[in-house]
Length: 135
Length: 106
Image 1 (cartoon, one colour):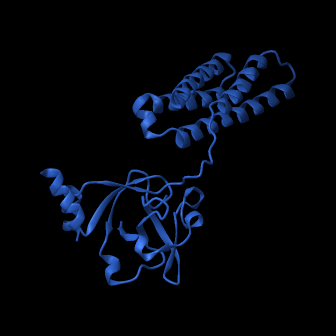
Image 2: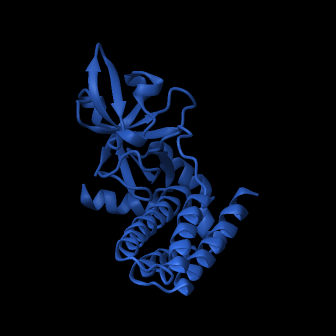
Image 3: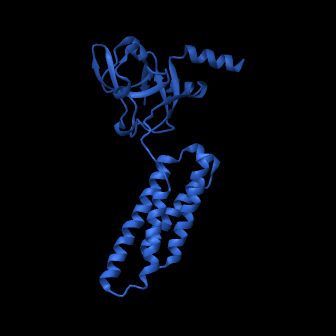
């Protein structure tokens, strides 16, 4: 049987079988990630001006949560919205998402607004690719 | 000539070869996996609950890969293993035996 399968796997043409879901259940938009990243950026800009310890603690806590949401929204876009055909047209897509989610992680560690700006710039690049797929 | 040979081979072959498109059979089968469907299995016995089968979608005849969840009066209720993301008998109803192409070999 294994020999037969091996022979047929070389000889037979490959057809397509669908294992899909055709419910239009997902609405996707990089704006979700951008809004959370803007909150992170706002905190990074204001952090230096905070004097009370409780304010700093709260700012760090919110920054942590918002940065995690950025990662979440980017992962959803990456894994659920983008398809192999998008990757063919935008070969840097995987690298772009990898760098963006890394940048979101970096904003958790950092209090430097430059890291927040880097994250926003990468999300802007993703948005450009996203918009291109809608044309 | 070559295409004619392939076409003939496809028609007489007891096995069909398919590439999976979609995620409804996760975690058992993932998008891009290649599977074989044995067209002869159900000539000798009836399909059983739990088996993964190839079938023709009753709505448009596309080939689907699903698992038999329930058999009632010679009709088959099929679902994807990934029930949160699958179009199956929950939408298009139970299928007839005639819609079944064969058993998926994995």
